[in-house]
Amino acid sequence: MRRRTSETMTVAHRSFGGGRTLRHGAKVLPEHARAHNRSLVLQTLFHQGAMSRADLSRETGLTRVTISDLVAELIADGYVAERGMREVTGPGKPAILVDLDREGHRIVGLDLSGTDTFLGAVLTLDGEIVARHEAAVPDAPADLIDVVTALARALVADAHAPVLGVGVGTPGVVDDHGVVLAAPNFGWVGLDLQGILSDALALPVLVANDANAAVLAEYTFGGAGDDLMLVKVGRGVGSALLSGGQPMRGSRFAAGEIGHVTVGTDGGPVCVCGKIGCLEAWLSAPSLTARLRDSGADRVEVLRDAGERLGIALAPVVGALDLSEIVLSGPSDLLDGPLAQATVETLRTRTLAEFHDGVQVRMTEQGEDIVLRGAAVMVLSGQLGVS
Image (cartoon, rainbow, N blue to C red; front, top):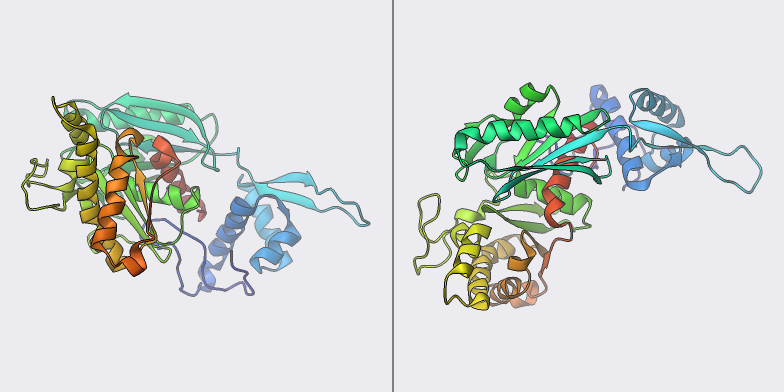
């Protein structure tokens, strides 16, 4: 984290709230300085753990008087707690340590990207899951909202602490107000999912595309670099991008929607969107599973074919953005192995070897929890300015 030498320095922390970028360079106006400084204190404690007020002053560049005032306010609000005295061996009064009150609030996360099941969890402010719930995806599209709402209510009831907010990762193109502009697999068009859940739960709710949620988890909890593409494979196929530490959303909120890019001129299966040969029709978990079930299908050949088509879709993106790594998220039995290897080989044959042979393609280590943890990052950022 960069040192601050002035209380009106530019914002440098990561932020994922609606319409805000990961790193923002605008000058903090005086009327916004206090909110910025609160977030700066919380961000520092989130990443560095317990420290004294003097430590916080040194790390943030804020004066000790400002830090003392902010810490008192955050303790009163229930976001920070004193953690006892620091152990010292020399003379002088030991300092009192303060830290984020990591047990004082809970976050509810929902992942709607599953093929058969919606996942939900209650998480700590550190992204650790303390309770899980799930619900079967209903056959009738008209029942989807009722099932999602019931799942969210069950999670809130199981939180056993004040709920900071609810984060939702859903398939489809989602704008910065949580409106699902299009989700073909659900039949949603212009659905205000964020508004519906906010009204039903009487809590802050943030909704994002599932891949966009997942990349936040990979960046905050997974140690990913600043130039990253995450490909999310489940009911559909989507991706999310960070370039130079900045999230890429696109002019119509559809950046990363590679699932409906046509991969090849050899025809292929009909996609749910109505086109022929979309990447999603080759690579989605249901499509891959169905082809692998076909009598006479060679497993390695099917997986390599899907991996090659993924590489075809990714090569122009890697070439244009000079990405350093591709992270795959989805069923490891499908993605890890022949499919990932074929993706790497295709990337190498379709990009400039001198610069792009080192692009890493790997599976996320966060498993099926990645969207749930990304939903927690959304809430932390939207409510506390922490990520």
